[in-house]
Amino acid sequence: MKVTIENLEGRLRLRWTCPDTGKRKNLALAVDDSTTGRAFAATIKDRIENDAKHGYYDSSLLKYRPLTIGKNASEITTVELFDRFTQHQFKSQGLAKSSINSRYEPLKRMLEKHLNIQAASVDKRRAVGFADACADTLTPGTAKARIMLLKSAWEWGRGRYQLADENPWVGIASRFKSIPVQPVAAFTLDEARRIIEGFRNNRYYSHYADFVAFRLGMGTRGGEASALKWKHLSIDLDSVWIGESFSRGVTGSTKTKKARTVPLSQSVANMLQSRRDRLKPDSCDELVFKSPEGLPIDDRNFCRRAWKTVLAEVGVPYRRPYTTRKTAITLSLKDGHSYLEVAAACGHDPNTMHKHYSDVIQEQSVFVSIEQ
Image 1 (cartoon, rainbow, N blue to C red):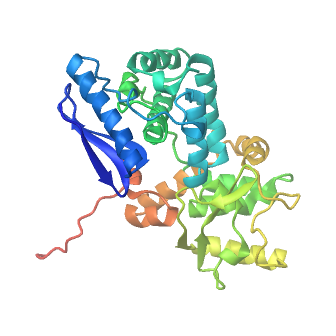
Image 2: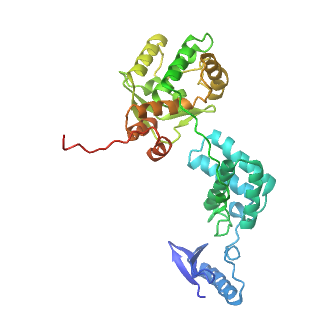
Image 3: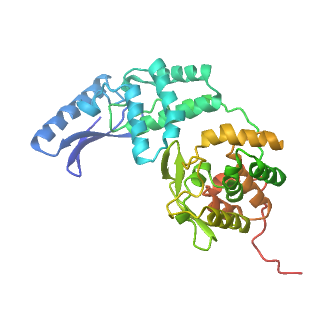
């Protein structure tokens, strides 16, 4: 087996064909193309060729990677690796803190309990063992999601830390078969109207009536409605700009990191006009919907106190406040609107919408009938 030394943008790497699989292999050496760097590269080259010749070749390449110190140390543990992956997701991908608390932190605790070892030593056998631990305590869907997160963390970590080229988590998620779950039904038009009326007539929670009407009428996510400011509404109240979201005490971008401008229905426009005339906001930077204390609406408090109480009073079976979004989408699709138009208005991925709302999407031919 022959190993070659190559210059890639001023840095050295080795290239060869793996004797076990026949695949091309690359090994970045993290050294400049200099006399010293070439000497170092030749040493690693000779070692790989000699190991291949005598049957000691390490297909994981860990044996040949240059040992470094600090953040790239080969001793990094699974917990440290996943923690740094989480920080990367938070900073570069805009990961919400609520998502960290609900998805990432529980997985980190499981790693601390069941797999707190050097990340470089995690092989397929250990990955399967961790998957079995997940299966003992989690639903198949949750277990699968956690394995997929670990697969992503290892993909991110390769090239940054001393990890094997073969990701040990690949294929593990297929062990979990998700159990079909009946989807939550949207509110009917009658139920939606009863909910709004219930809020308007409740002596304690009438404050939230417009907030609920907006969510049922526009299909926004809860955080998007909570972050809405008067400046986000057009002057004549015929459209609204959705580009911010409030969650767990923090205002950030929307879930998709994209903004959208949506036309307002006449009923929602009338409600907002009446609300603006009544409240007379001092600044366009004021929130449109606030808690009774004048603060942003906290979704957990709203759900636990106001939402559950009013639904029980009006006799509507309980569903989470998020169902207001599904209701607005469903009613719009049943009214014959294109799912592409609805997806754009709601900030939804069109393919995902088609998948989850295929039972209510009214497919129609786009072609004109020629013959009468």
